[in-house]
Image (tube, rainbow, N blue to C red; front, top):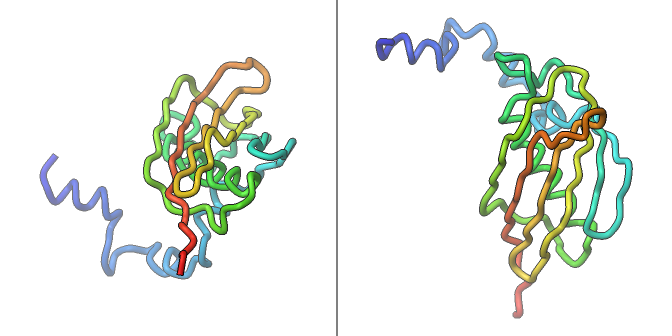
Amino acid sequence: MEMEAVRGYLEKGGGEDNKNASTINGMPSRFFERFIMDGLKIDLIEPGRVVYSFKVPQRLLNAGNSLHGGATATLVDLLGSAVVFTVGGAPTTGVSVEINVSYLDAAYADDELEIEAKALRIGKAIAVVSVEFRNKTTKKIIAQGRHTKYLQVASRL
């Protein structure tokens, strides 16, 4: 593929030819998080653990018609951050230091997933959480993620 063809593919028509520019620029703030998480239901919440149900929507499928890896990684980020609050003590969920996702199986449209987020360690400056995706019907593990966050350290002044 020549460079201009690659540029056109990545920019999807960019510039004046981009028919989606006004729509994209007009999206509400934090649209992406709501786009990914819409349909998520909390089944259980306790200190250091949250279990969710999630029916895979069409909008999150990749070209192979399975749950997009980027959507999975985003859920690891967002749900991993949320479990930090269940432990208490952290004024914010901090910023990501590392996210690792192992993709073990595929999930398809309308598959019902159980997603379990667990706090592995919440320290003064670092939090480490795990997020596991399982197919509710087959019980197969779809993906496992680990998320490390730097927590805002309280000033000693």
